[in-house]
Image (spheres, rainbow over the protein chains, first blue to last red):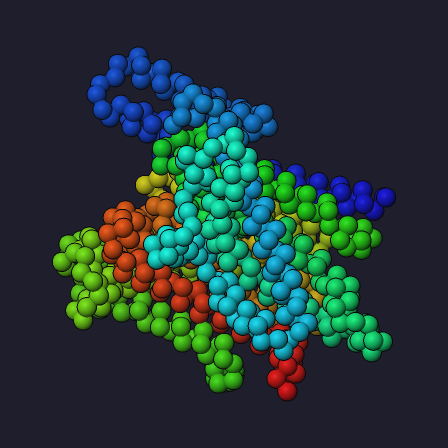
Length: 334
Length: 289
């Protein structure tokens, strides 16, 4: 048990560092602007029609408080942390007076669902096919698949999603291209609503998979083709162990470790991709919320989403790290 | 001379390298032709708007009265330059971190790698959006390049560190230490040449990555939209609802060109990698025999 505790404390420490650095970046970014955000918002708000000087003074005060620009730099820094830890980012400016946290909570299930399904499917399929391709090197179908995914791999999420949108929105319109569910969906009909949600998620999930599967496929293929040359695999083959069993228990089992680590490392990038995909398909998650918040000039919402993203992604990474010893017991010894 | 010979051999014997080089050269040629453009990049209504591709305007014209082909030459030049600038700055950071961390080991290594893993994990996109939100009109092309570079060095620093770690135990390093060389000189003079090939191949991937970010941000309008870039072109096309009104050439050609660039750079990177890592070269020979 002791080695696991050491491992656990190391991972927790790393988690703390990630959150600390991430929140500090957010703080530095929001406080490094040469523009005074308070004055900018006031000038935007008072551009049409005249406002009394008292009203402007009041606005100025409440905005400085909202932007956390009151007091000494040290006090500002502390109150920034306080807001992050409590999860209170104040009311949203564009959807006043709904609190930011409520808007985020409403969008979060969509993003988490989309990410979870697409990431697990991509990771599983990519590794399975990659493992097969590394083991059965002569298979034509797997080779062709390798060429296709290698071509798709360097293309960023946005372009893949956009091309999917064109293909299924304009050229061959068979799937819904926008939204998380139909407008007129009957939410009391659980099965029908679930089906509706699934149909709406097909294109976003497919584009996330298309952009992501190549990396796992190629990584697993090269890992497996290195392991295949190891002595113990040759020995198992000579001893007449069935090929399927060799692949599952001798080869894949050893190659899966680095791929789990890879999943933890890629999570930030996968999250970025989900945000962009949501925007393209008008999916009602965190990404669409973030982009509409920028267009609406909603400072507290943008800051809230950024910090929640940092916290969320680093928590997911921590979870994967903590599950890792189940897959590869050797880490505990290290 | 030796490098040239290697490149020539790669070109003749490695299909991926030859294809990648060809694709990148096409894109560079398009970018270079921007210097011969008959129209200044930012002028609008210099040609009749909304013309489909024809001999006179090979890629058609936009709703803003710009020739798509010549606009594209400026856009791809800026986009390419962006990728290169980001790659160079972030390479410097990842080389410094990776070499020092790998050579020194101990607590220096632990601190640097902890920082490194942090930058790998943190979701970049919300931070960049937050940055744009704060800077607004002050967000210039150069500033964005600097920020992306400051956030994008971590993957490769770890790779460089692992090579530097294996170099540390080699005999020539010990000899250098005994003859009184300091950390800086050992890392710079003795270790740098060993990591340069792998740095070169990761540079190509890094260019791809940063261009992807730039395209995404500017498509959403979160960059300086007055500098023509590939993402900026798609942004303006979306603003004019080009696809709904059937002006597909305004969107299709920028996307096609940037996808060519992505695939070209990627093919170059993997073929370089294969050349650097003799194990995969051997397995390739074995696979063919």
